Length: 329
Ligand code: DGY
Image (cartoon, rainbow, N blue to C red):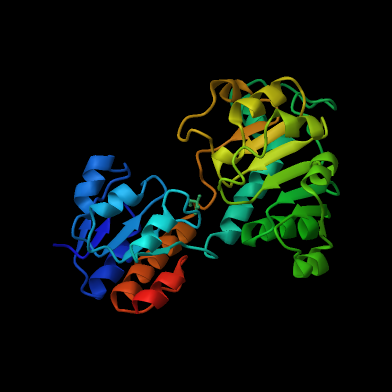
């Protein structure tokens, strides 16, 4: 019986790390997720599970894995895992924080710039041979980013990194919402904590950087888009279900807001067909927030290290439910 089940293709260095620790493993070396039945079969008997956000790891699956001690998600978000169900069974859950913070903030800002300055539209125009001469009022005339107001919904690690790019790189005024004040960000970036309503009303660009939970489900609907400036942009590189996607399409189409940069989708991998049709000031990407070679390699290694620690009898460095560890150790 293999000790560790790796559900999808990860970076080879992580597999080598498991091997260097003499951990036997079953490796589904494919970019396609296992279907739920095959996943159930794969986890049977394993002590460690390395999985991706497309693997649904719920209590039902855990019932099939009596030996499971640790579930290591190769992601910082873990809305694919029922952490309570794991805790009830004494299973440690880990994620991959920090290593992807700057990479995800870079992508968030890339979406913001691309939507404001209409880069994909300009790219299509250029490649199709439509550029005949420079005009002062060009078809892809955009809006400034420098000096505008950036609203951060969720001033955690990634939110702060996005805010830093805005404040220090682009002279932006930063507003934020968070569960608690962030004095360090306020000092470093001149950021101000505001109510959600004020952030909606005053921001030129809003970046969503909060996890997907019951509380954050659909916090952006038509009601919120109506409170935003008609010139505002929404950027989401966090999780799809935070935004009601058909409302977003409607808000863009009807001019309630001006643009959007969207990396995550409510019914991923699907995109709302109306949203897919919209091009002006709208940029979409296939969940590539953390997708740099360096970062995805580090995430893979981190997940492997979390499993190794747990199977060696140590509390893994990125345990989300470390109270479980205290109870079993
Ligand atoms: C995460 O880490 O949560 C990303 O969405 C996937 O890399």
